[in-house]
Image (cartoon, rainbow, N blue to C red):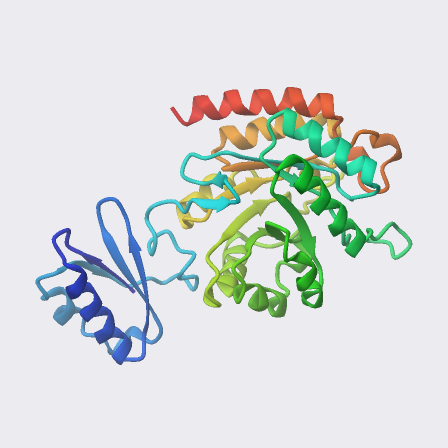
Length: 334
């Protein structure tokens, strides 16, 4: 249920109303927008007399919400969320460009790529230290050493960093990591999501290979229910019958998610296509569709990459793509 307050409602009146709700065993979620203040109610709201509530002088309207996701719901938070990642903002018209290798391989590799993507306009550096691979014989990442190398790149370039977590027992290693990525395979790892909800970390939550938007938002709700509202959603392609590309990029998910939730949305054209020559087109399409950010895999030697070289663009290619992304973003945000 959401309760919209009138513009002239005082802070004291709002707090008194929230206490009344909380005395009934409900959790309150206050969202202050430019024109309205909304109190979202979570819990068993059947005991509330809507007629009585609407009769109060400070109430503009009351509405029950049928969707199971509450805190992630756009109705609870009308204005788009803006998340600040060490100075790099996303949401509310702010574009985030995330770039870097699929896996951190060597110090020279990550430092070279980090400086290159920064020079081309990237605002966040990505790099995998823990890699979930389909085959147990494939490169699994450098683990703690990979995090250390990312931190060195962060110190050298000033770029915030993002890396994927696979096991909550490794959370201490991510202390200096600015964005913790939850991969597609872990989107419904609810124990992991609950623990991340108790942190103040920005979390980039990737949509699962065969998950609906509702399921993605319910996973975000797990994190938000723990008190952490710093969530970025990521559309990275879903599994369909098509085999020409690695996955199928669901561009319709972008406007649909913006309609359903206030959380920012990132598109990952690298994992969505699995083919480097398609990355530019899908990145531009994602921005044109309203994405708040783009995440692109960049490698200085894709042919010899230890992970996902086929979908990685070179630093020169990324530079051209980033320039076009900014132009498209300027057009669609006018």
